[in-house]
Length: 221
Image (cartoon, rainbow, N blue to C red; front, top):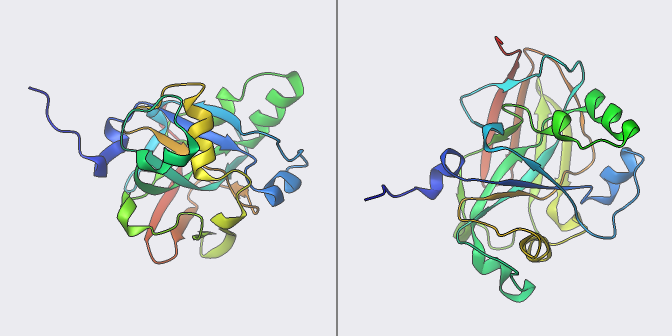
């Protein structure tokens, strides 16, 4: 008989990390990118998960690692072609997440028209906070996110500024790929992304809900 899978530790068994790029207009502008007319999607592998207490690992092939602060949505049930009207019924809860990005590598990928996997999918590229149950968040579109590096405020933003809402994102993704229980959706980052170095300490939080702390390290291999 299979052991129960606690939602509070979704990062241990969840299959998919689906990320939405450029979901805040100010971030699109700071990246000198066009504001999208539909969600821009990319994936991270489950080995990208880094729960609090483990380090963020700077990939050996990058010299410019950036933080991107995001609200993560954790799915509580399987869904395919989910209507927007019922999309929130599929949400189990939330987590604060970082989409760590090898920016120098991403720039080269963009220049050559290549996928972003090398820039986005490396080990420990998705640090996550403790799980926040859905009933603790009356409205996920009314949250303030913030991030500090070595005590200096770098990013802050309101989820009300997202271009595409959470129900829209869930519905859109589920029409392309079946979403599974335990999957994580990263909903995009507000403006203020920037570089971190080895030994930097990142602190981040969602006002009134959760905080987290990570240190940046180089992997041993």
